[in-house]
Length: 246
Ligand code: MG
Image 1 (cartoon, rainbow, N blue to C red):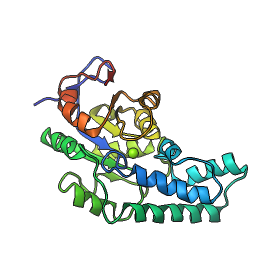
Image 2: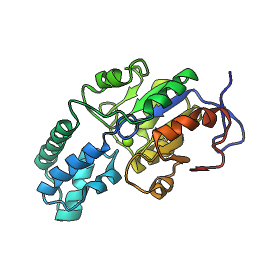
Image 3: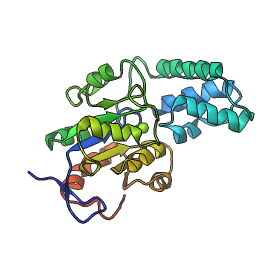
Image 4: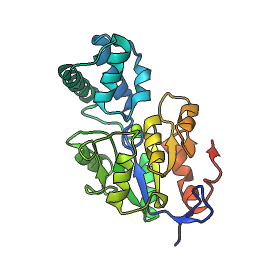
């Protein structure tokens, strides 16, 4: 059964793999990340509201800390500060997020459809939690393979650099035009697009759709549930050309 998709070219292409971002796509974990950043960085004298941290999703923790120190304190963060603040933020995140993580509504339905179509599922995340795959197996058993994951341990440059998604393609042994990316964050969308991949945005947070379009998204859906309703048609019927506005 051929699956075809027009991705800004004239010839239909076989889609073989879907590359999934994790936070904000598979887990509804961004409120905890934003809150943990806000509490940690406010105590260090940074003047950013919690919602601002949604803009930095996908950056490495180091680069977020360095950028905010330069901006608000007018100086570079020391190595000690970077390590201490990132550790604090991670601990606070875990306290907010555990013992129960919240799976993103609709993510299961998207995964079931993608699996039924026989497409590979690959995770591409900037997260560096050591227990990440165990948690994936707990919440999404049988959908993912430990070998088909790109995490903070695999890359030197985080999103928006194309490296994470390029590595996802390599691990899945697929070309850019044989894959789709599902992302929620502006920097993640930039990363997917920089890797040359058709990138679907799901707006699961507080940012305006406009920001996701401006980051280069090829389609924007209001939720994973909305994407679940459309993903088979999206893959089968080449309806992604021209851009979809929902
Ligand atoms: Mg995300």
